[in-house]
Amino acid sequence: MNECLKPRLRSLLVLPAVFLFVTPCFAQSTSIDQSPSSASFQFTQVDLNLLAEVNEFDKQLSRKGLVLKDPIATAYVQSVGEKLLGNQPPPERVEFKFRVLRDPTINAFALPNGSIYVNSGLVALLNNEAELASVLGHEITHVINRHTYIYNRSVRKKMVMIDIFQAAGAASGFFPSGSVTGAVLAISGMLGQVMVVTTIFGYSRDLEREADRYGLDRMYHAGYDPHAMPRTFELLDERLEFEPVEGLYRDHPKLKERQETTQEMAEKRGGRGLLVGTESDYLDNISAAVCYNVRADLEGRRARTALARSRKLTQWQPQESSYLVLEADSFRVLGAKTALPSPEELQKHGQAEHRKRYFKLTEEEEQRELLAKPTGPEQLQANLEKAEKYYHSAIQANERFADPHRGLGFLYQRQGKTADALREYQLYLSLAPPDAFDRLRIERRLTALQPGAAPNTVTPAKAPE
Image (cartoon, rainbow, N blue to C red; front, top):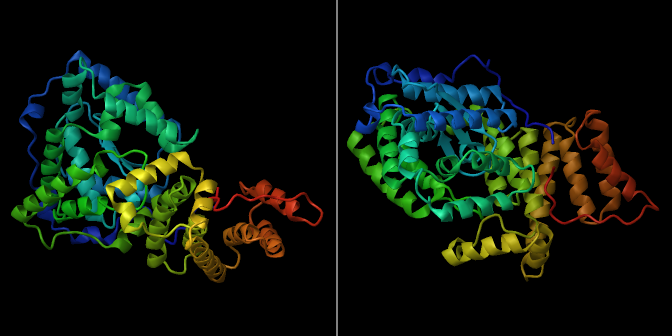
């Protein structure tokens, strides 16, 4: 699929105008205290050995192409992180870098060398700059307060929570070979148990509370409304469908507790009227990450999540054809599934059943099961009609854009409308560039649909590649 078009007219060197409204005294005047343990921290050989592993892990994430390479999103996340740091010098052996990881799971993590990663799944969930700042402020605290080293010292001679490693192993098995999330887990697992725990599952509850507390203060002193942190935890409680890795950011009992605690802290701090930022400004900078994540969710059988994220884009830019195609793809891949989970699916038992069926059934088997229900055929028809509508809206917005014709070809072929599918595939090939990644795939479909060709079977609700 072509990259999402980016209707962003400003230069990459220009920071969002909203930055200009931050009161200067907040951004530069006050440094954030460190925890007592970190203030007196002295490196040992154990710490230096861990740092060497961390630096190698950091390099591997870039070498394997797991870091999002959109310059606007990268510059934006880096600028928010630097604003939170203010004029405070970094600790010894730390160089702060803020990046987006191409990973659809809801997570973020900090390496003790100062590299902070926010997964595209979390970036796509958030709505404004202050919510992003709440995540980065939390992760900055892990680095400054030396949490990874402290945690490593406490567990390196112990049998560390075997259930965590079983969960990590199960998650690794869930992701298809070559997937981004599977690659991250594989790299962290190769480099040691502490990397698996701290990058996927987080630290002890006490260290996480400390990161929330200092992170919220850091937000406040940087000029952000600290109430964005409890709002972020509330947002993180969203449940649309099964996630293979339930990391710290989606741990339900802790999430409620953290939301209530940070709400009390924010009320004591004040800060109403400080910077929150608009969703429009946020998407203007981060839309490439959202686009990537929609495609990743579609490929991972998470069409409900893909639809929710693509709708954010189409509501922001209703005439942007690439965003309309993403929404159309989401409805098409939903097939006979509803756009939102039922109340029963949101219950603990329903989530457990969803997980079981996710592993037991293929996507095609799940669709057949849904179609066997009384409401299945009607739901399928409704979703496909919406998909067709959005594909045509994308064509109206940009008649030279190839992708909606490919989507219509998939849709019509699935419906048995051979002549319509042939037409749309031919239109796609005439508009797509010569080196389009799926040109050969569409040419083969076109050949298979020609009169006299062998019957072609299309699996239902196949996600776009």
